[in-house]
Image 1 (cartoon, rainbow over the protein chains, first blue to last red):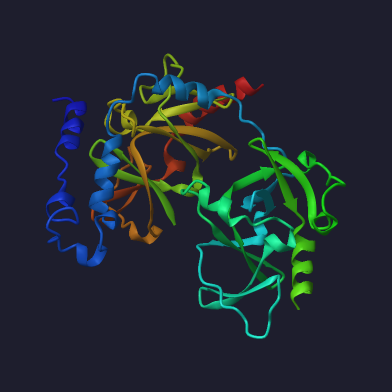
Image 2: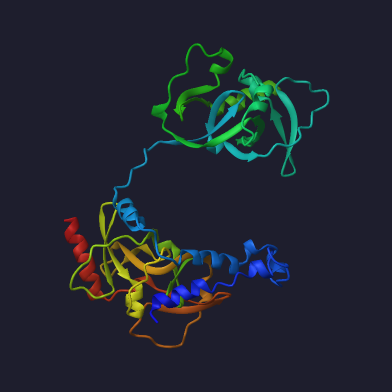
Length: 230
Length: 155
């Protein structure tokens, strides 16, 4: 028997114990006490890795030979990483390093005797209370709830938590799209027609997937918000 | 430390992941005539020509099986000329990276002058795992053969 045959045999004789005594079986496997789910057990992951012990598809070698031989594209120097998100109908971006976390929606606790249009209240993030502001109001974006309800149900609203210089700030967004790499040369200047209120907070505009994205000036943004709610 | 694991036949081996540059699929290699059987050929890696050794051929005297899990590990190899070269190592079941300490690998107590690259052995649930010392993989004569070609190409 050649080595190939013995290897093949090893693949064919995988014991799918997760279907007999694991979580998809009668759950009697003693390892479940330690691992809780077959996903965490190395018997399961080892069996998964054995799926690679098979002949590659026909064009696989040719595709990779070409791909590996191609010269590497040098990344543009000076690119910055920005997080792209949506408030209402408008798309914005902020430097990724300013965003410390993207959170699931949670309840906002209003602060008694502080009835501020910008300050929504406090939210609980890992046991710490953080200020939650209405960014839509600050940026003069219409927050059309009815239109939002008609939107794709797969789109999830989130809360972004920003942190810089020991100050933290959270706000609601309707959608978080991606982390995008943006070069300063791509940025277009702020159009004069933009409401003055927002113009001060904007660093520039860039195009992403045929959409106009407004890059917010992180320094000014935090400063303005904190100034207004105090 | 992080280790990259692979198999040669039925046995599992590990190398220090910090010397690994990239793991690429088994691609078509340019054959070099009149070299030892374990010199698998030359890979064109983003325009650079890099020699690839078949660890299965070196260790077991048979070629690596052409499976999806058989991959080329590109390592930074510092030879006896004290300069760093990229070297490709063809090995089977290159599918796992694990965290283990260097001292987990116990000496075998068997002197193996013919295979100086073999190190200590550690044990885990999947069986025994033997350390491979990349720097001791190639005898000096073979280093000269492989890397002189590389230098000639660069000049």
